[in-house]
Length: 134
Image (cartoon, rainbow, N blue to C red):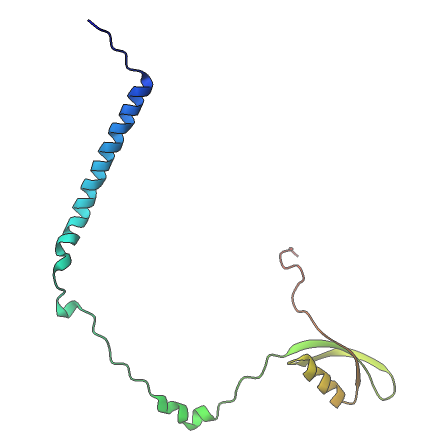
């Protein structure tokens, strides 16, 4: 009579192997139960009443030639705030802010008003550190 010793590591490996194989077969069985009807019915034709009917879409491009569309005005450019320092005819310095679309537009507006522009700078709106709490 022989005494056979099976090491615990070998038992553990055998247990996990049996569990993996059984889980694999259970997964295959569940997949077949779920997807077999889909695979069987795959080749059947869809009845015409269940198919998608594409609606007729008619676009009226004549509306673009109408008077209402022709009377529309385009959007103006977004105005930016600028800080300025100017000198008037009496050589007195004045400072303030002006709204204009670009730096050149702001300079033209100030020169048209009779001022000599000494400094013109865009005002940075917002915060320099947006992630710092108040």
